[in-house]
Image 1 (cartoon, rainbow over the protein chains, first blue to last red):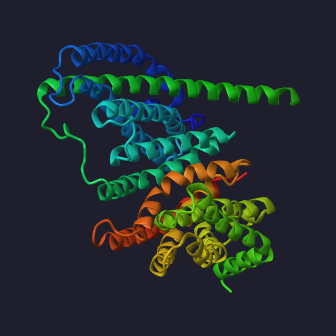
Image 2: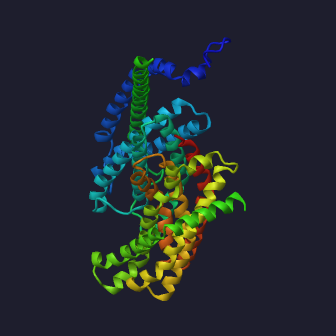
Image 3: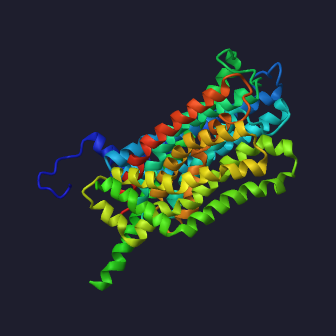
Amino acid sequence: MASTETARPMRWYEKLAHPGQFLVWSAYLIWPLALASAAFFVWGLWLALFASPDDYQMGATVRIMYIHVPNAWLSQLVYGIMAVAAIGTLVWRHPMSDVTMKAAAPLGAVFTTMALFTGALWGRPTWGTFWEWDGRMTSTLILLFIYLGLIALWAAFEDKLRAAKLVAILTLVGAINIPVIKFSVDWWNTLHQPSSVFVAGGPKMPMSILMPLFVMLFAFTFLFALLQILMMRTEIVSRRISTLERRMAMEPAA
Amino acid sequence: MTPFNAIIRRDIRLAIAAGGDLLTLLLFFILVGALMPFAVGPDKALLARIAPGITWVAALLALLLALDRLFKTDAEDGSLRAFRNAAVSMETIVIAKLVAFWLSVMLPLLVAVPVHALLLGMNLETLARMMLALLAGSPGLLALGAIGAAVTVSLRRGGLIAPVLILPLAVPILIFGIGAVAPPPAPGADRAAMLFLTAISLVLVAIAPFAAGLALRMSED
């Protein structure tokens, strides 16, 4: 497209999505995001560990929540981002959507693992067991398996362009299925395990607990944005390198 | 004969021609059921309680094994390329292939369920419910399998990746499939499970031709 004679300056949203321009403008975001994330982590951890009260039932273990909830929130947000990017890949065939999907999958898997791990650590003192086939835990575990399957699918293809489209199809099928999985697991769980153990649920938490939670949510979300941008930049550069390598391999023959 | 019917006939004839494969698959399905008593002990009451679960898992495993045949053979012998250039849409072809696959693979499995019932001590009522649940759920399982098989059709090691992609998505079918058979923990739960199972199955069957068709068009080599 750039080769047409009536080349006009790029509009701002085109700059946003052009891989080369992305490398330029995202470079300015790395340090601010890193600093914001670090600042929120320091503030949030101080609030979570020192400046917030113990729960009247769970004691100090309630502080695990400040790590657990942000990870659980990101495990779902990242899948949402991947699903939107998958639409971009299939409808507009935009290379940046491919890169977004590819970069987000391992991050989503890590956040989901962290959510499960901290959940298990929290479950041991409060419920007396590391693992319970509770509705939320079960659907989070299945979400982790979906992430891992998508990563395996990415890794199985040598041709990344084709991989992106096929992974996108499966990401969307997964996106349709995730609410169904969540619903079915809840249905299964309420039948087999009538009493829910969650005590501190709902918006009735006092401000002293909500505040560190929000700060930690911001800290983890900034961290995700930072890692996502770094992974995308790495992916773009590694694609350029492999294109160059292919071109150099072609040249001696000509 | 319309292309749709022609593809169904072709696939069923191919499946019958490779009849040994089908018998091996049936044997596998029965063996998984027969192996379970060795894994959990020959306690009749326990076996009867977990029998529906065993049969569902055996059906799922058998389907995963058979899936390799769904699109892979067509990709290997070049039929898939012909399908891509055919006058009928890829979605139509996928539906035809799914109908043929269900008739030639899932239906024989359904017929073998009474053997499971005998080995695992299901009573007659459970057997009837089990067959009904499989009848309702197997098209949905097959639809998921078709999406997984289509996405991995151009991979040499696709046979390993497809199950990993399909199994997590099959959880709702398994939950409601067993809910429809097992003794209901709450009154009416089995009926609700049966309806949900049918609904999920229908939705998946509606999605699969488009998702699998798109994947097959895009995995052109």
